[in-house]
Image (cartoon, rainbow, N blue to C red; front, side, top):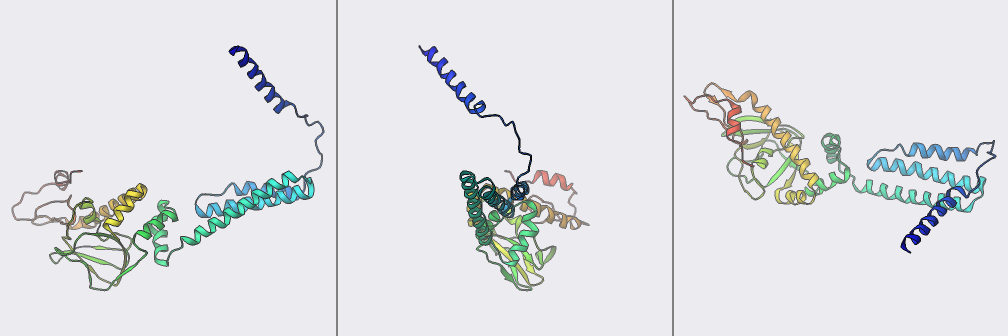
Length: 300
């Protein structure tokens, strides 16, 4: 009985598909005249519309052209085909595209930034393919505030300022010194305290071992340590992004110190970079920097 019922069900399925595919009459006499210009305009708009890219502006491009295409198809079905069902579906799709276009436009307006944040996005985050929505989360974490540091004022003082934030310089120039001795400069689009940030674990505390002084009037943004770690916990992609940016920033600071590493008395010890230990004392045997980096690296 079961086998027979299965055979009957298979036969019913076969007849269903046969009726669905082959029951319709085959087109014998094709129309010799072409459809109206409105139909061809709709097809062209569909082709161009599906070439849109990603992101907000790509969505605006797609929904705008597809909406125009469905509108042309609605007009064509109403005037030439005179088919209510074809007109209804095309008009519904036009309304859907129109609503989506308005919604995306509202989203684009809601992620507008001040000029300094817009310049930061264009220079640092957009080349990395970061979307405006992700960048907005990063900006909200710093309370959308740009801080001014006047000339010869200190951002951090050696042995006094706690490491409780991460800052990015937008304009100006910062001088880094240790015990009054110049180390290097910090320029726009670089972190002010990336070595300090990287030297501590989330649960650790510390103080600056260098002094950071503004050589010119500076503008920077800052993220509080705890608040930024909460953002990392919610969005792993942002955590990986900052890890790359901070690592690259530390590497550039190392290159900036490269000319000042070897002295007549030995090797310079830069307290900011915990992975780069050396001794600057008379009579100390010179050790290759690579070996020092290997022997004194932080354990992860």
